[in-house]
Image (cartoon, rainbow, N blue to C red; front, side):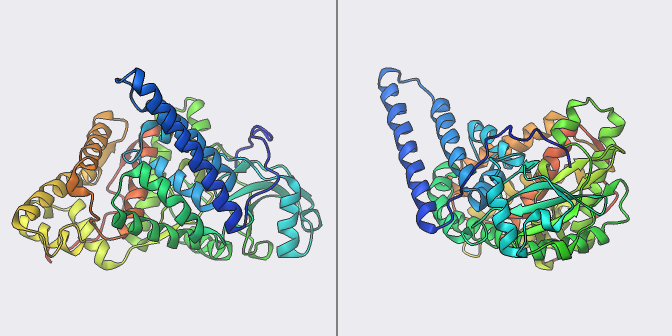
Length: 444
């Protein structure tokens, strides 16, 4: 794990943990946003051509500051939204992207308090050395460096109250999400429910340790992918101890101007890591933001977080990946059957609606599937991403897409694959895409 300059972000000495404290913070933020709107519309009286960019920047700054202090599920939603570049105005994307790498860290006394609660001891009674200043603070927890018996360790500590406040936080963040996303109420409910299920799992660190061991063993034979060793005896419901992986985050790695061969090597490792899980394990690391990966000095991909895992049931996996990886899309009748199974076309749709959704979804999946239909794919090409985002922007403005469509599994599977595509685009990597092929069926 890369060393970061401690104290670059001011430490936080307390965190609102009760429902009342947390809702008060949201109310205060709501008042600020209301003030931003008043300021915007006052200016618009004198300048009718004024666009919303300043308003979006002010709102994004206020919302991000509030979510950073609250941490937990609210900040995690911001992190997710920043990865889904089609959903938000650019000002929000720019601001929320910060949550992929850092948030204000918690102060030493709060860290000691967490250790005493779960181990009955201070950290320096457990480890030979423990750095009370965190090296990395994100949405759910922060990482500290420690040593035991000459071994360098990373200790991830969950913020107080995060695991207990998920449901109430998501209710509080809903009005902000509603305003930012423009989704229908029903669609937002499906989105929030799926997010809540994953976050409840993600804050259970005992579950994360079990999954981390299971997945790192299952992926052990992949080329150029490495995992830390986990220590269940030094972990608890809110603390995880693992080996310290030396390396750089993506942003730092790219700043070293790596060779194209090295970019391709890391890109290939990422592609194989994700597609092996999707197609062989039917469960996937569903949090592909750059903060969860390190590039080691040996040029390998280090995976340091298995908190968010999405399992794919067969009735989702087969229709979706058969559409992306075969010429099934050329068969209109079978494609419509698959769309029905995926709830993209509804039972009560009229013939005109069926035709409309068939056309739009066929275009969307054809675009998404481009990397799958050739043996290699160059992710540096901007034309592919321009098409992808252009399509997303176009349908986001169509009234036909204001109602919820598609089974809930799309939320994390899309997030995973578009997140993967975005990292590969940042790497400008050219990868072999035929290494782990989807399993498919051609008839429904």
